[in-house]
Image (cartoon, rainbow, N blue to C red; front, side, top):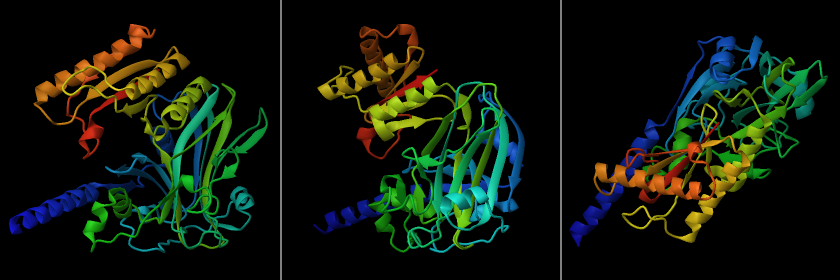
Length: 408
C-alpha cells in the first residue's frame, strides 16, 4: 500500500518535471541588429515572394523593431517574424512576472492611428515600404500583444495597430488590420469580454507552484515565454490589388492615452506575399472545413493533421467518421484542380521503428488509393510513411495521424 503511494507520487513528480522541462525549453529570442530593409526583404517577405519591394523606412525608437524567434511545444503560435513595439522589443521576453512592464520609446505620434483609436497616440513605431505585386492579392499573418490587458481595457488607453495599404492609381487607402470585416485591432476591441474568440489570456508566471502548470501546459508555456498579459490569436490580413501597380504599405503601432504599458505586433516571417485570389479562397475553404487544424508553413503550403482511424495494426480504414474526413479532403482537391497533395502517415511509438514506418507508409498509400478511386488524378498525389519519428504530442492517440499537405 505504502509502496503504491510512493510510486504514484513519483509518477506525478516525473510528469510535472517533464512538463516543466518542455515549458522551460520554450523560449522567445529577439535580434535588433538587422536593418529595417533587411527585415522586410529577408524576413517578412521571402525569396518565393515575387513582389518588388523598395523604399523601406522605419520611424521610431531603434529598439522598437526587431526579429523574433519563438519555439513552443504546447501552443500554436508564429515561430519567427518581425516585432514592432511601443517600447523596447526585448521587454516582450518572458516570463510574465509583472503586470506593468513599460519602456518609453521615442515620443512619436501617428495621425492615422489616432483617428482610429479616437485618442492621442504616443511611442509610435512605423515601418513603411513600396511594393509592386505580380498577382491580384496580397496577404500576411500577425498577432498582437499588450500589457494593457486585462486591467486597462476600456480605460482610454486603447493601444492600437494599423496596416495601411494605399496607392495613387487607383486612388485608395485602407486599414487591413481588422477582424470580422470592419473591426480594427485594438485593446478595447479584442479582449476577454469583447470579441473574446480572438483573445488569449496570459497568466502570471508562478515558479513556486509547478503542479499548477502540469494541468495547464499551454498556460504555463505562454506565461514562461511572453511578458505581455494578453494576445490576439494569429490573425490574417489581405486585400485585392492590381498586378503591376505600385502600392504603399504602412505598418504602425502606438500607445494610446499615455506612454505606459507596452504593446507589440508580431508579423509572421514569409507571410507577406503577392498571390492569387484563388489561393486565398482555397485557404479560406480549408479553414471552413477543418478550422484551427489547418496550419500554414513559411512557403506556400497548407497542412492539416487528421485522425483517420485504422483497424489495430492494420492499414484498413475503419469508422464512418474517417471517410467523412477523407471526403472533406476530396472536396478541397476538387476546389482547386491544380493543387497537389502530399500524404504523410504517422504512428505512435508502440512496436518497432521498422514496423511503424512500414505501417505508416501502408496507411498513407491506402488513403491515396481512396482519393484516386474517387477521381483525383494519381499524378497529383504523393505519399510517405514516417512511423513514430515525428510525434506532435504526449498523447499517443494524437500521434497516430495522417498529415495532408496541400501544395501549389
